[in-house]
Amino acid sequence: MQNHYQIIIIGGGPIGLACAIEAQKSGLNYLILEKGALVNSIYNYPVNMTFFSTSERLEIGKVPFVSNNAKPTRNEALEYYRRVTQTFKINIHLFEEVRTVNKAGDLFGVETTKEFYTADNIIIATGFYDIPYKLGVAGEELPKVTHYYKDPHFYAFQDVIVVGAMNSGVDAALETWRKGARVTIVVRGGEIGLRVKYWVRPDIENRIKEGSIQAFFNSTVKEIRETEVDIEMPDGIVTIKNDWVIAATGYQPNLHFLEQVGIELSDDEVRCPVLNTETNETNIHGIYLAGVICGGMNTHRLFIENSREHAVKIINSILQNVKKDATEQVDE
Image (cartoon, rainbow, N blue to C red):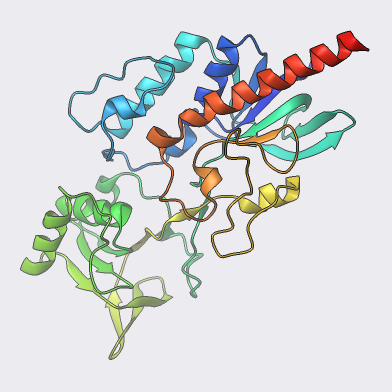
């Protein structure tokens, strides 16, 4: 069966790569299917982003991650995971999105945008950087609005509104301001996010205090138009001049895809997938989850450094099932 694999891994991020490495070490044939570029989530990070974690905590496959600084950058991470992929000659198909996963007899059928495959086991490691939280306001569909901030130079000498005061929003505000943008930050709460990187938080607070960056706290965007934006504040609506809106409102995992596959989720607001904690297997025998997706809507519980272990647990479980099936065939 030319398109059959013992394991199909959906998602080519760091944890998907870690699963592939463990499968390869165990002699299991596998294929990673990634809808975008290699480590697509990291690729979509802002160009100048710095990780919170140190480089050794981002390592996979026992390949050393050497960084120029204590905290590695996005570009260093892209280079590292590309080198890991080359080192292990990982079998990965890029820019091939999985559309459906269905049970086909004793196997799983996987339909993508390019091909149809079958597999004995499925590992879903899709992360949470796929679906942005929408503002839900008129004008959000305008070309001037983006949920994926990339390069600060683009915004030089422009009127920029940044919505959100967590790490991505604060980074966008500071970087665009340093390129000459006139920056306003709109914050739903009463202060800068508590999870903002400790070495960045004083910077944004000082820029706001001195008036370099204008901040509206306890406020929300009400409406976006071509040249201006309405901001709803506690004491009324204010309209300000605007060229670009960076909606740094966060992202969410594609739980709809899990539901389509038939994976059971919790009934509360977290929508956490129901897993065997020892194996990471879902309610569907042969389908496993790895990485951030395991936390459902709680996207701040799992990271690369504390979900690398999922790969080992999952591959060990699959190996046990392979040995069990072989024993049963011999007995028959």
